[in-house]
Image 1: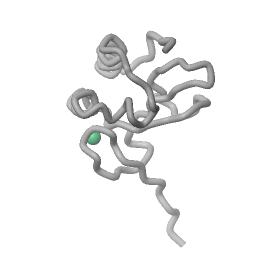
Image 2: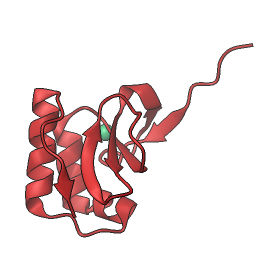
Image 3: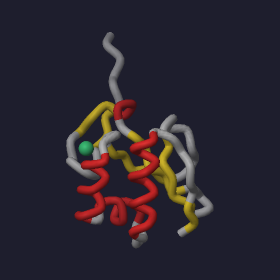
Length: 95
Ligand SMILES: [Zn+2]
């Protein structure tokens, strides 16, 4: 039997993609927002393609804010974009 691939929707382009091809944005129980490249951090997650364009679209449509029921400050988006470009987790934000 073929293994079922978990699919998630990108908050930017809204396409369904295999979970492992997406980057998880996670809000920790402490209220910090960060990128989770390994998909292992605890907390509420939203998924986005590893492309700055998708993050920009999510920013325009406030899709991320709606996913977390939060108003996300501009600087958080900027930091997430930076993290994505550098493919590493550098900052963590408290909201
Ligand atoms: Zn996307």
